[in-house]
Image (cartoon, rainbow, N blue to C red; front, side):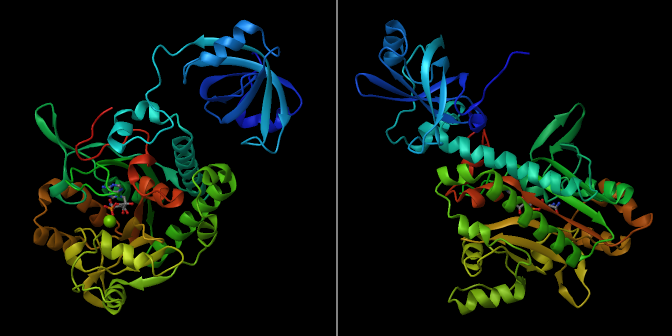
Length: 432
Ligand code: 4AD
Ligand code: MG
């Protein structure tokens, strides 16, 4: 196989001549010297060509080449503290692979969000998006590594489902030959089945919510990693959540320092994300909101603003437990000490980000579950398989879903969730 060189590995090539295959991301010129920003998908690097370093025709071609043309460049690598990235390449040869046929639409000037979203297929080439999406990939890998190394089995759950998991108001319907099907809102119910078969499991995949929410933290299609554990109670679920989040943040801090730097992220705030996280009950959270002069009635669900206020009260994620039955789905176990509330837990990210994880202990008793489903108007016939899990060796169990995009928005310090996934699906945004 031919030797390939990547910008991401520049540190290994100091002093050597390398050929890079990439795209032209930027250019400055001082007349006699060209400074080319080249990116190859693993990083960005400055390439320098003086008149005479490359042949005249190449020099002229490079001086006029439109942005985002593809090119192959050869030159010597040298460490240089002044260069962004710490290395620079002095060119000896360059070859245009395909010159862009039109001026690149994304320029250095400020573009509006709608324009950038319309050009999302190109926008993802820019250094900020590069940083965010690499952090996303690391978040996912850190999460799966964490669970895999602790004996969890990854068993993915169906996207096309016959029933709802998180209530019927946000279901996407589709035809399934002669039947009706819905896009999955969560793999949880199926996870409960696989947990009874395999003990500790997780699924990783997209969730769909047909929710007419146009906020900075709602996507119509988002990804969750959802662990589910047999013989686990609420405390176990919280321990597992906080260790997972601690490790995901730690991996990003150590492996993606350069990306966090591009985003100008305050890494001290992230370095504080160490277990144990503070734990408060919903009732305490309501009291805290009221004490802070924020009017909130016990019994309601927290909105984005409430969560923002709460999450600013702590310097690391906070676990809020025991939400009222009315605001949580049918599968939540009742609190044996207070019938009004459930053994549920949401993790709110600090710095105002709010909920990034939702979960809890699942209802164990078949009769109680049936009663609760009837109360909530859940069609029991369709969930007989789910009730079977309580009929055949029911055990205390629980789990949670961590929303990848909400997590990435927080860790990257982004104002909006839209940049945390390559192609966001949002209210009124299905393209590109
Ligand atoms: O709180 P949610 O709705 O919980 C569930 O779906 C459970 N069945 C998960 C489980 O216990 N296995 O969603 C879980 C997480 C939220 O905390 C949030 O991070 C993310 O998924 N999430 C969204 N992310 C982006 N856009 C949306 N519309 C989201 N809805 C939920
Ligand atoms: Mg939730």
